[in-house]
Image 1 (spheres, rainbow, N blue to C red):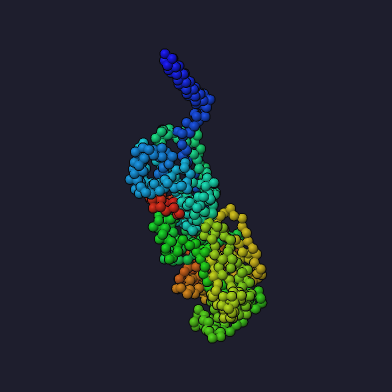
Image 2: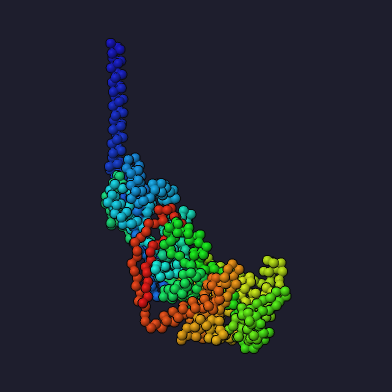
Length: 630
């Protein structure tokens, strides 16, 4: 009986203990429910809202690039991009249709599954950023994705813009080396730019004005908020929370598209070289051509990009600011200026021995371009006929030190400071030598080196934009800093050369064009007095390079032109006519008889983007509008 009593007491105690546990558990549950439903209800309501609300960025259109008159050189065209939002796709990671989404997207977009998975797995991007799978998607692809979007959670169709270009001659763009191109941001650049609001797949200026003015052109993206269900499918939107994108600022250039087009046309398709047309009074670049050129559209395709890089003609090189050439007879004016300023010569008196087509110096023979000889000449006659023997003799009297001083004074041996050089190309400084250069390189100085230097040969190299600035100094007495951005404040440096000497040089350059013996006759322009100088630069790697420089009108210069054509022979025969056509176009525009009619054709259909081929360093806009002049 005692045992039964003890057993009943134990059972009661256990029952009370279990009841206490149940009560405590229910109390904890009640407290949790109370906190969830009452105390923290607002916080969890907001959290719940966040779980169903997703942010979709809205791309901001880039600013336009315009010429000096406001004509659009680079604009934007619409396109569609297929993107994936990883956070919505990964909600289905435990579902069978996760693999289905990637596989189906691969089939629709025509991309390998590995390519899509690799882009989704990229650890450089922020988790919430959309992953652009295919840019410039065709309408057929967009239609399928839109039709199947209920079965493709996380897959979005985004409206984006691509660059279009003012073009000529069947689609070639105007001034591609100046305007540049945009491309995909690489991982290294993204690490530097992410704090500025960039996304890994964003387009960014890679070259030219696009890069130089990236911060102004870029704009500010907007945001769209959407509601998704537990499977990551869009079920609604929040239009009241949408922030609109802000388009980037337009950039105005100093180029005149009509003059630029005339300059592009002046170069035959087979020619290589450069043309720079500049206002000598302030340094504005009116036209700048580098041939061969390229289409920014080619940057988007991996095969075309590799072809451009492998092309031995180097179409990506901006020859106007980075091409280095011997200046040839264009440099004879520097020797002449030194001689005039030093009082060694005047313009009309014949001071040296007659030219018989050659000059012996030491154990070498230095020849004139005129094998029959030019006779006994004054400075004027020597420049008009471009007599080498005359300048051999003058150069010896001037000397290497004075020649080098005047050459540097006129802007050679240093970058011009042109603004477009900061757009990724950089700028070549060229080479101006002195006595110490030869001693360091060859171990000695010989006077024979001076004979080559005085006619623009030997160890001397210049860029076309340096030549244009040099001719500007002869035109107005100041070295301007060239620029292509219209809002730039002009800068110039006076040259320490007398006004009388500069006037004399200009008058002789006028005879180079107008005199019957002048080598620049083919640059004449009806109704305009043009002053100029030809040059034929010896090229150890092939045919000679052809030079021509000009300023016009001769007595009140408004424009200077510098032209170099690679492997083309004599400057008077090849380069002078090119400059002449550009000058004709300039003065026709200054006093137009009939204004040209501009017809801009619509953009062509988009092509598949380069992301499909994993091109992550260079992409750009598609087909440009066509321009026809009537």
